[in-house]
Image (cartoon, rainbow, N blue to C red; front, top):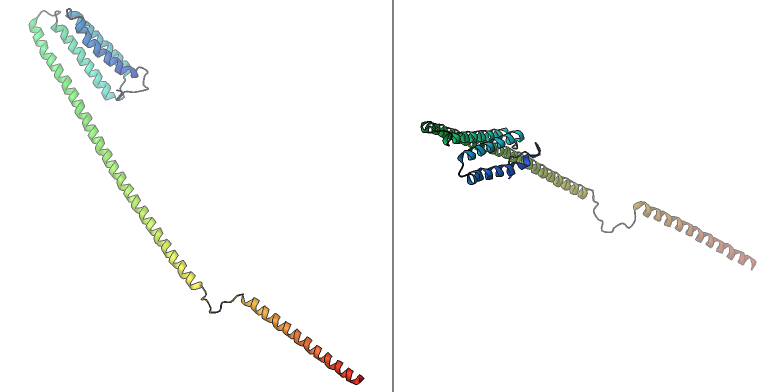
Length: 229
């Protein structure tokens, strides 16, 4: 409904569809209501066209200037048709002049059709050109995106390979640094074992000294006993 309509240029642009439909309804009602008075029909149609041109030219509801220019051209052609209708009515009493104005009417109609056809062709060509341009931009974007994805995939593969190499190196270092198990596993560190052995030897020497002292004391006691006897 509001294709190519400017939304904030004027507060009257939103009424473009309403005004356009009302004009068309009036364009149909005027010949129906005043079917017996051709001169009134022509004057009302001309006044309706002039009023619409004034409103459209002041509001300019469409966004693109080319569309505004085309609408103004079409309205000017319609006004020309209305002026030709005045010649074809009872205002003109010369049939030869009316017949000659028929050629002008047909020429004006041909110009209107040619201009509108040219506008449609140019617009379709611009749409096709814009689509080709967008297709080229899309293809370039897809190519850049594919290249980016390939580079990211290559980086991920390189990271995976580096991680595998680090894992292999770590496993190799762990294997190289592990101490092979002995048939009789050591229950305590070497220093603690040596300290315990030294403590045992010291205790053994002390016990031996005590034992010797006790034996010597027993010998002395036995000798004293014998002397007393």
